[in-house]
Image 1 (cartoon, rainbow, N blue to C red):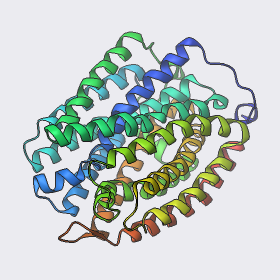
Image 2: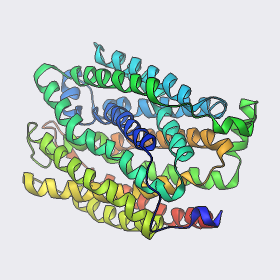
Image 3: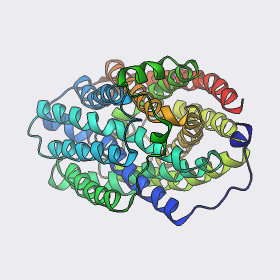
Length: 410
């Protein structure tokens, strides 16, 4: 294990097929992340359009996470019994269907149901993507791979969210979901036609009993430690996201037509930071980069959540630096987590880990909905309390990730 885990300054170059895999998985992640994230900036439009309260909107965001969490547990027992390409296509097809239902939703309750369907299928896809990444790329290359794949988050900020907001402002909140469906169909066809089968794990004869395989996964001590760390990491990220657009609009004084510029700036910084963070983590060590990203995140969250009326320029800088810190945590954390499971239980581990991430995020969204209060003028009260909760969660995960890093190194 030592030669696998040792950080190297020079890694082998990607083959043409590996470059294709990185590109197509990044595009796939773009559609998944955009589908999940687009609801937050639409909050300022959706809440008055559907006449719903902040707590109802928090439920609208979190139902995706709870549904994804349930499907992750259900899929975990079977995740290592199929070709990962076929598994990916199955869940991606369901995700596209769920997104289409969101696009045609006529009411709050129909949209709530549609988000549940989308989460059930979409929530498992991330775990399959990381299992594929771990199967195809060595540990020394994974920081760079994770860095590129995570630029999907940035691309959704730059291209997806501004375009989605533009469509929503001009033709209604349904249009961004139609956009996601159109892009997703193209990505699905590319995967179906070009991706090779990924079935090396089947040669290791995974456990045929799905229930036994699940129990074995959730009872392995080193896996439990990783799951607990994921739970705390997710709690922090999901608390701020649902109300970010409403906070920028009503508290920071950024007009609705200027908010896309904020997402654009944040996305540009993330596209620059993602691959850079991946390369640095491969060279100097994943945990060192994680600690740096965590400390930067703590500082910027405290600043961001206590902002009042702010100029667009200052808001752009604060958001860009804050998301750079978050990326500097996310990429090395995912790389370290990928080294925890054995190949024959990799799919199951990733599915359970994704499930915990989604459920923890769902609880965080609901909790945030109860903490935050909205005045008659739309102003959000107690938003700074969310920042303190995030700081606490990030601080705890530094300690937890330290022990994860020790296990990976050993």
